[in-house]
Length: 488
Ligand code: NAD
Image 1 (cartoon, rainbow, N blue to C red):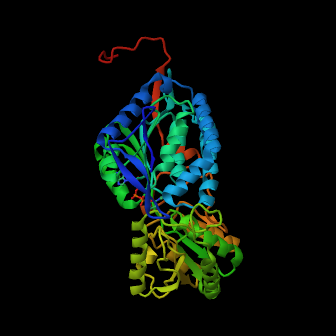
Image 2 (image 1 turned 180 degrees about the vertical axis):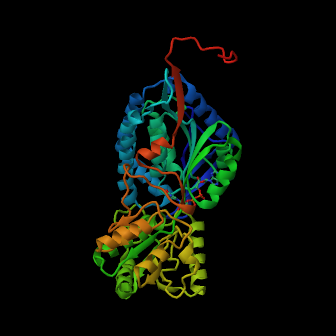
Image 3 (image 1 turned 60 degrees about the vertical axis):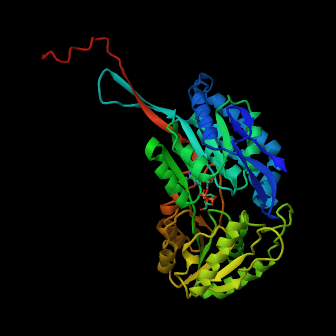
C-alpha cells in the first residue's frame, strides 16, 4: 500500500491517525492517507497565521508572489502526468480527463501569477480640503480552502491561485475521498520556493477536520466547494469567527434545446454535458429541456450514443465513462432512480449496476415528461443520469429552466439570435452557455445563484474575494490641529 503524508509548515508528516483509500475501479484499498484531527488542523492554521504576518511573505512584493506562482505553474505542467495518474487512481476520474484538466490547471496558476501585481487600490477624490485618502487592497488573512473529491487539483487551483496572488496564506483540506493528488501536489508546491506555512495541505473528515478548520479563530475566509448541506454546516461553524465565505455548490443545470438547433452539435454537447466526468460534475447539464417537436428524434439520438459509450478502467485512454468515486454515490444514484420510476419516470437507457468489481454505473436517461415532479428532476445525482422534460413554447422553456433551487450553469441551443438574447437574460444561473457547453477559463468568473452558492471563482473578481480594503487618511496641512473644545 502506498503511504501519503500531510504538509504543514513546510514539513511532511503523518497525521494523528490514518485511513485507507479505496481504488474506485476495483473497490480495494490501495493507499494509506494521513487523517488530520484537531491537533493537526490547529498546527496548520497556526503555521498559516505565522506565515501571513512574517515579513518574508507579508512584505514580499506582489511581483515576486507572481513569480513564485509562475514557477509553481511550470512545476505542475512538468509533473502533470504523475498528478493525472494519481487522481485517476484515487478518484476513478478517467485518464483522458485528468490529463487534459491538469495541463489546464497550470494555466490557472499562470493567470493568477500575472494578476498578482495588478490588484490595485485607489486614490479617493475625498471631499475635504487639506486631506488625502487612499483605499488599500489588502489580503484578507488565513484562508481555509475545502474541496470535494471530484477535480480536486482544479477546484483547489481556483482557490489557492487567487488567494496567494492576493497575499493570503492557505490551509487546504483535501477531500477524504481520493486525496492522493492533493497530497502529491503539496510535494510539488514545496519545490516552488514559497516561504514555509504559506500553503498547508491536510486531509480528514468533515465533522472533525473540516469543522475545526472552519471555526478556527485565526481563519478569516472559507472558500468551499461541495454540497449544500455541508455549506450550511460551514456557515454555522463560522458563526464564531465570523469568517467570510465563498460557496461553490451543486446544480441541476438545464440544457435547453429548441427545434431550430443544430442537432448534431446539441447531441454531442448534451452527451458531454451529462456523461463527462462520469456525471460527477457540478455543472452537469442534468436536466434536458427539449422542445416537443424534436423530442423523439433527439432522445433517440442520445440513447444511441449513450449506449455506445465505452465504460471501462479509468486508466485506459479509450474509456469514456469510468467508475463513480464511492460505493455510496452509486447506491444513492440507484435509489434515486428507483424512487423516480415509482413516480412515473420512464427509463430510456441504463439504470442498472454492471457485473464485476468497482463502482461502475452506465449512462442513464430518464424521460420525465409525465413525471415533472419526480425526484430525478429536482435532485442532483452526481452520477451519469439525465432527466428529460419537454416544452412547447419559449415561455415554458424558461419557466422549466428556472424551476429549481439551484442556479449554477445552463445551456441553450438555438439558431435564433434574438431568442438566445431573451433566454440568456431570463435564466437564473451563474453561467449561460449558448450553442456550447462546459467551456471554462481562468479569465471567466464561475459560480452560482441560490442553492448553488455565492462568490465567484476565476477572473479578476475571484482575487478580490481574498482581499479586504483599508481606508488611509493623510492630513496635508502644516497648521496645528485646533483644540476641539475651544469655541471660535
Ligand atoms: P461534500 O459537501 O460532502 O464534501 C466536500 C468537502 O467538505 C469534503 O472535503 C468534506 O470532507 C468537507 N466537509 C464535510 N463536512 C464538513 C464540515 N462540517 N465542515 C467543513 N468541511 C466539511 O461534497 P461531496 O459529496 O464530496 O462533493 C459533491 C458536491 O460538490 C456536489 O454537490 C457538487 O455539485 C459539488 N461541487 C460543486 C462545484 C462548484 O464549483 N460549484 C464543483 C464540484 C463539486
